[in-house]
Image 1 (tube, rainbow, N blue to C red):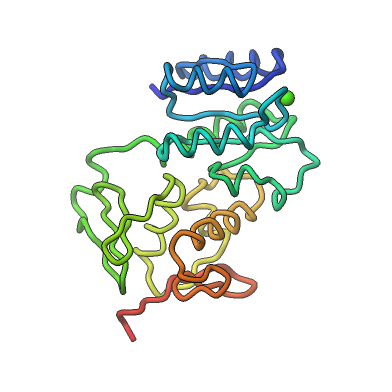
Image 2 (image 1 turned 180 degrees about the vertical axis):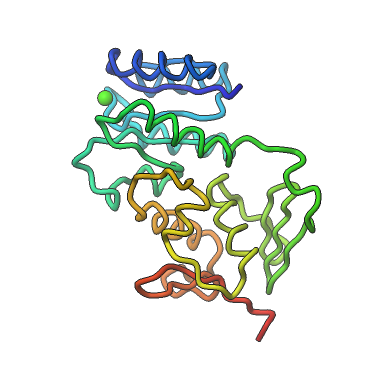
Length: 234
Ligand code: CA
């Protein structure tokens, strides 16, 4: 069963999340501060971390950056204040996979955790019957090891970024709408904002494009979504 680290300074919220996760058979560890989260992370080795943004001392964004730098495969969900505009949630830029605004229904949080789990937890048989590699232009996607290369150099992707790239590589040269990306990656039960897609595309572009403000590969289809150009078809 997946291991979840809850990082939240308010005890009542922490306990509410814990009770609900344990009913769903998750293994849970708690931290009251960012500093404690870093200690627990090292010993508990969670699959997913839930990070409250407003923490005493080090805030959730700083914790997110440190955890992401230590573990690229960790799933990270930020717990944000409802008033926060997703465009301003820097935790998403710094490597979080998703966010849930407070106050939230624990059932909604669990749906989001389950969706993220599908990205974070590897099923060794998932691509057994498919071709292992997809190549296009200077890129190569390895579905078995979940690695992605540009000119032979590995580009390090979070689990969410990997699934975004995989979706585009399985549909090269086809425009994909934000809603479809949201359904396919974050799950059909996702009730958050499709801006989460834009945030992830922006982060991805900074990793794969030569000039992320003037993309050659992952292009915007205005008012609709995105397309990964099939450069080998031209
Ligand atoms: Ca707090």
